[in-house]
Amino acid sequence: MSSNSMTILINQVAYQLPVPACLQDAITAAGVTPPFAAAVNLQFVPRSQYADHMLSANDQVELIAPITGG
Figure 1 (cartoon, rainbow, N blue to C red):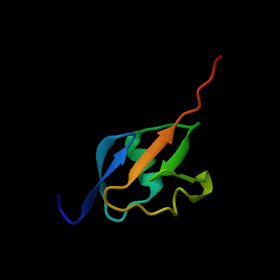
Figure 2: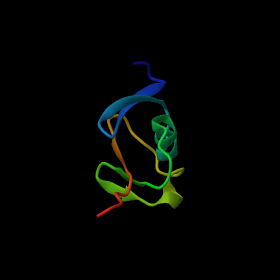
Figure 3: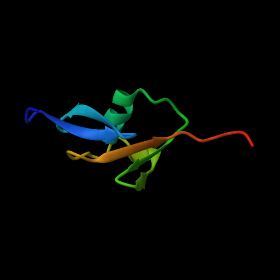
Figure 4: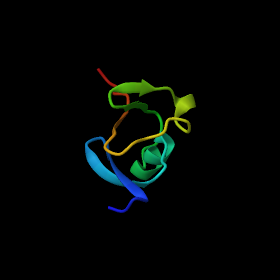
Protein backbone atom coordinates (compact mmCIF):
# COMPACT_ATOMS: atom_id res chain seq x y z
CA MET A 1 0.00 0.00 0.00
CA SER A 2 1.39 3.37 -0.95
CA SER A 3 1.15 6.53 1.09
CA ASN A 4 -1.35 7.81 -1.49
CA SER A 5 -4.02 5.30 -0.48
CA MET A 6 -5.55 3.78 2.62
CA THR A 7 -7.63 0.75 3.45
CA ILE A 8 -11.06 1.16 4.97
CA LEU A 9 -13.79 -1.38 5.56
CA ILE A 10 -17.17 -0.76 3.97
CA ASN A 11 -19.77 -3.24 5.22
CA GLN A 12 -16.84 -5.45 6.31
CA VAL A 13 -15.22 -5.47 2.82
CA ALA A 14 -11.79 -3.87 2.39
CA TYR A 15 -11.55 -0.98 -0.10
CA GLN A 16 -8.56 1.14 -1.13
CA LEU A 17 -9.34 4.85 -1.15
CA PRO A 18 -7.09 7.78 -2.00
CA VAL A 19 -5.69 9.98 0.76
CA PRO A 20 -7.47 12.18 1.69
CA ALA A 21 -10.94 10.62 1.35
CA CYS A 22 -14.32 11.55 2.77
CA LEU A 23 -17.38 9.47 3.53
CA GLN A 24 -18.91 10.43 0.17
CA ASP A 25 -15.86 8.88 -1.55
CA ALA A 26 -16.46 5.62 0.32
CA ILE A 27 -20.15 5.61 -0.62
CA THR A 28 -19.22 6.14 -4.28
CA ALA A 29 -16.61 3.36 -4.12
CA ALA A 30 -19.16 0.95 -2.66
CA GLY A 31 -21.74 1.81 -5.31
CA VAL A 32 -24.54 2.10 -2.78
CA THR A 33 -27.62 4.06 -3.80
CA PRO A 34 -30.17 5.76 -1.53
CA PRO A 35 -31.98 5.19 0.67
CA PHE A 36 -29.39 4.23 3.28
CA ALA A 37 -27.93 5.42 6.56
CA ALA A 38 -24.19 5.77 7.12
CA ALA A 39 -22.05 5.21 10.18
CA VAL A 40 -18.29 5.50 10.63
CA ASN A 41 -16.82 3.51 13.51
CA LEU A 42 -20.37 2.97 14.82
CA GLN A 43 -21.15 6.71 14.85
CA PHE A 44 -24.08 7.87 12.68
CA VAL A 45 -23.15 10.54 10.13
CA PRO A 46 -25.95 12.77 8.79
CA ARG A 47 -26.31 12.90 5.00
CA SER A 48 -25.46 16.62 5.06
CA GLN A 49 -21.99 15.76 6.43
CA TYR A 50 -20.96 12.98 3.99
CA ALA A 51 -18.65 15.29 2.00
CA ASP A 52 -17.16 16.85 5.16
CA HIS A 53 -16.58 13.69 7.19
CA MET A 54 -12.95 12.76 6.52
CA LEU A 55 -11.87 9.14 6.80
CA SER A 56 -8.72 7.65 8.31
CA ALA A 57 -6.97 4.38 7.54
CA ASN A 58 -8.78 1.35 8.99
CA ASP A 59 -12.05 3.21 9.57
CA GLN A 60 -15.11 0.98 9.49
CA VAL A 61 -17.97 2.33 7.39
CA GLU A 62 -21.42 0.80 7.56
CA LEU A 63 -23.97 1.64 4.88
CA ILE A 64 -27.32 0.35 6.04
CA ALA A 65 -30.40 0.14 3.81
CA PRO A 66 -33.82 0.22 5.45
CA ILE A 67 -35.67 -3.06 5.63
CA THR A 68 -39.27 -3.02 4.49
CA GLY A 69 -41.97 -5.61 4.89
CA GLY A 70 -43.54 -7.21 7.84
